Length: 437
Image 1 (cartoon, one colour):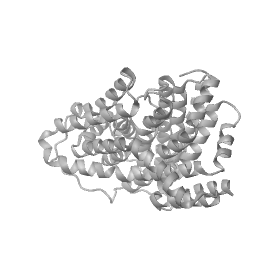
Image 2 (cartoon, rainbow, N blue to C red):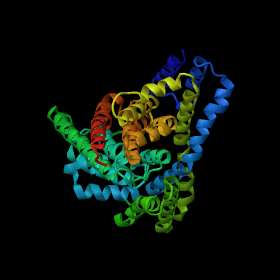
Image 3 (cartoon, rainbow, N blue to C red):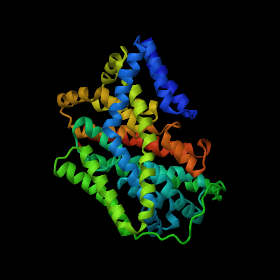
């Protein structure tokens, strides 16, 4: 019954989240099912297990979520994010609209802009490029996800995105963990998504599809002054360089290094845009508020994971996962994928998996002589495969912003964020086993 309760609760979260129900209250409901079927005292389960998991994640990661949200909001409000995106699209041109969108999204997210902010910054540029190239709008979401939700988030070494930071907190590894493995898998992941979208563009055009004007666009001010692109790139560079210099060069922990780098970048944006000081207060307020829903959503999922860990069936589940035949990197990848897919959250599923399994895998890594940096990179790569299920919050936001539906765009999103990354993950594990790190 306890094992049934775990799988039923996971299925319930997936189903209700897909229907649009908030995980903030669905997660405690699912936790209650795990508690009842596992014979746990419900009040103790909620007040101790659930809230310890919830509060633990918020305590560890809220500063990064808040500072990251403020950073993204400042980049957006000062038009610095738009400046970078426009410069890249102008450099590459409308002929290569899909490539321009991928590169622009990659620069923003590798520079520390959150995926949610990047979506809002990229969409108006996508409309201009796709209109000029006569590409159907239903291919916009997939192009954005290649640059924003995929390889810059999980593969490229040194990324400040939270999915690359979480494994370092558990394994004591730097953000640049397994750099060769990360670069190889990142290039293949980006290239695979790009090639698929080029093929799809040709296919839909041959079928007679073309660009249609959106109805959900807010008119832009033609007189707005776009900042210089080189100035706009500075805060992005500050985040990446400072994070990795402090983390690897000065042996700072990943979280302190990330927090300091984001503070420095936020201050730099304020200084560079001092003439726009009137928008600062509202932007800082909106950025701080914008961090609340994402951190609470993920914390709710992590709290659910803490209840699952308290269930008497959990040790059996862990033994089954760890006991998967073959190299332990395979079982680690499967465990992270299952939990990220079930929760619809890369950061939530990754935290649940590593909370439960990190110590076990540290021991296994020593036994099999596997560098912990490889464990870090494989865990991060795994978090970015099954997370983009239809009920994923970022996917729902992306479709809402672009005015598309699951029926119109999700298959292409699936191909570039699940099918391609899954193939790359398999290749990455093979390369890691062969000693390429």
